Length: 84
Image (cartoon, rainbow, N blue to C red; front, side, top):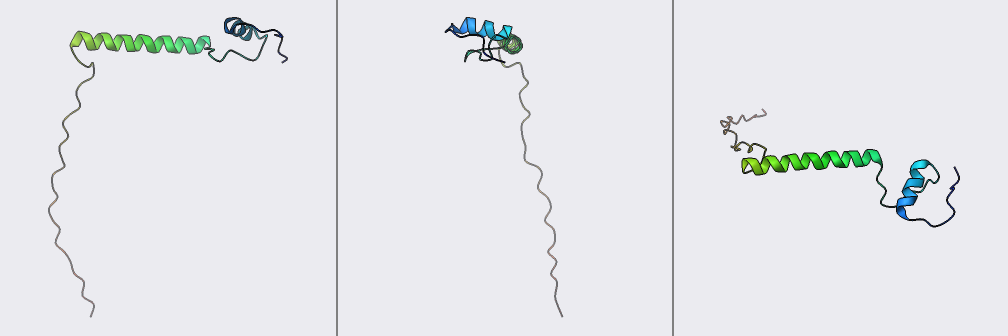
């Protein structure tokens, strides 16, 4: 595909031409519609978590359980092999 844009344009126009297939070079800050939808969903999730955190007066996640060391194993008797 040949680049159909032979004159300088702003990033906004370049992105629009890219989406129409007139050029294969989007602007450096180009975000596709699919990527923007993902970003919007992540912002909604973060906002909901922050609302929960403020409403509950703390983190929306439960505190992790206390870690205790495993019980000590009884010592094994030492076997000695004697070569005759």
